[in-house]
Amino acid sequence: MQLHFIKIIARQEWNTVFRSRTTRLLYFSLLAVSLLATITGWQYVSKFNRQQAVAHQQVHDHWMSQPDRHPHRVAHYGYLVFREKSPLSFFDFGLDSYVGNAVFLEAHRQNTINLSEASFSNGMLRFGELSLALVIQLLVPLLIVFIGFSTIAGLKQNGVLKILLCQRASFFDLLVGKTAGLTAAVWALFLPLILVSLFAGSFFLSDDGLGIDTLLRIAIIVSLYAIYFLIVGVLVVGVSAVSTSAKNVLMVLVSGWILCVVVIPKSAQTLGSKLHEAPNKIAFEQAIEAELSQQGDSHDPNDPHFAQLKASLLQKYGVDSVQALPLNYGALVMQESETISSALFSKHFDRLIGIYQSQNAVSSALAFVDPFLAIRNLSMNLCGTDFNSFTAFQQQTEHYRYQKSQRLNQIHLTQIRYKNDGQQKVSAKNWQQMPDFTFQPVTITESLSTAGVSLAALTCWVLAGFGALYYISSKRNYLL
Image: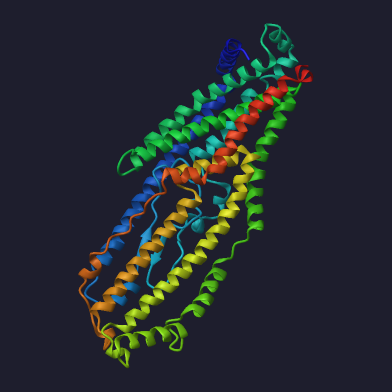
């Protein structure tokens, strides 16, 4: 491999790309679509977060304005928590439109997250949403196909390939040079667009400006899309090198594009659901109720668990009735019930999340077959719109609900007497001093560790791509 010849060939390919009228036409068309996707995505996320903030403030004001009342009434009054979109979600919507945006938190019950955009859509959402990531992932590879399909096959058809190989440059030098020139041109056209869009969008959408975490995410996203363009460029040059007809190359590459962006992703989703079947919402809740009735049902006066709890308390304090206990027995029962139900919900929820992760693992494994799946998974992870970001919100809201319920139960236990329990009240300051919910986003380290398989898949695609170019260059029949 001679770098001097590779640079000359790459420069010549660069000039060819930018001299082409087709390239300019396709680029400005994609640029217009990209700018439209960026602007509409930014406006949508900005408006959505403003609406969530207003709704959150209203809920918080209602909570703070509660009068003196019984703590158990406060527990069932509940609290509504809203999920805001991450600053980078305007770039890649990911799963945001398909998962819920609000959850009602109350005592003794774990509610699911509801109010997703998909639940209000008219069915058009299944065709996807226009985001900059969608344009980059789907349409830029198609542009690379159209400007690079004749890179080598065209030289074979007009007889220029033999002349070039007589200039002391090897076939491998030619393939690498063509790949470098084609990829560099695409980098120059689209990487600045991605970088500027991410910087500008996240700066205006983030309340605290651009932090280190956001800057790292932007840098990694741009780098990964650069690798993605390189992989597509290698594939285009490789297919062009093994064919003698530019027309056949175009047919093969377009068919491959359809296979990678439509067939394999849909098949991965279906296969994952078949291999790892998840219970529906009714079955999930019934399983929790069935196990709860076995471990301890606070509403059943003859429940063995709570009967044993009552007996142990009477023995501990040396009294013969719950009225004589120095604490509120009813509040203690509610506290114990909350502990049991919360533990059971977490157990079943973790099991359900494990099933969904197994389904997603099928898609991650198929990234070794389809680079589109790899970049899609990585893009969602880094933009905070993936499945793990949603489950982190679910888990944090459940933890917040449990802590809030138990604090109210503790107030009930210590400040309300057992006799005439329901007619007593406590000061509103007890719940007004409780901290508000604050979502802690998934760290960049957790995002990258989750996407480890996709990162490995992209690395394998790069190595396999250049390995394929070397193999092609070693076969004399591909020179004809």
